[in-house]
Length: 256
Image (cartoon, rainbow, N blue to C red; front, side, top):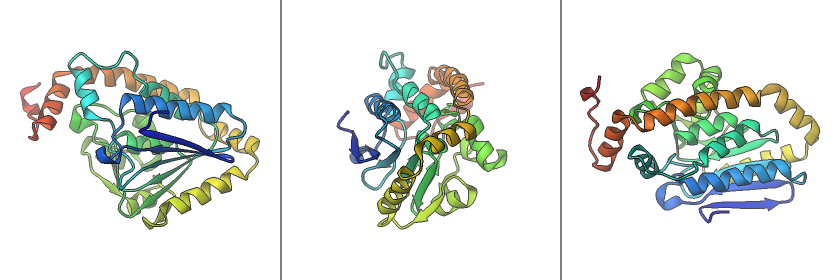
């Protein structure tokens, strides 16, 4: 696995740790590839019964590395974008996934939580989905899953207005299950993961397949990805990324 994603298997538990704390665990294409590989390994290995996703340092993840987005917007970028494999892995995973969230969870840092079965957050957690602020659209099937979870009004405010949701509110709204202290986050997430790993795995996998239609979720992801790719190459997105790099407010009024 890429050094910026640490994969560790201990007994029935696989931990996937985003390990780029100096960049607030912002996700690069290589990191997406490593995360996708980890999900696939967990899916294929009968000895692995639960997955834990966490971030190193004081953030879960600041979301996509915007330099990657800027490169794609300018006509560059990698030959293969591994984010698609990662999202497909989340959609089709039928083993339980636990997330431990502290600090920032931006963009996909929030939308991936919609695919986790148990989410533990701290009071300092701040979940944001600022897609429209970047002239983009939602991904990870969040255009449907987020409003199904918290209602259209709240979902629209998160996506269109970029309003952050703190840890306590995330639990109240049903975006997370447990509110814990920063010091107790990892222990709580591990305890939940080990509890799930002790359950009958056949029953757990069957339950997830009944509760989540992976193919339907993947279809929604495909529709989003098509529009997302178009938006990445739009003049609005180019202005958003230039403004970010230049540390100024974007001027979207120039576009009709």
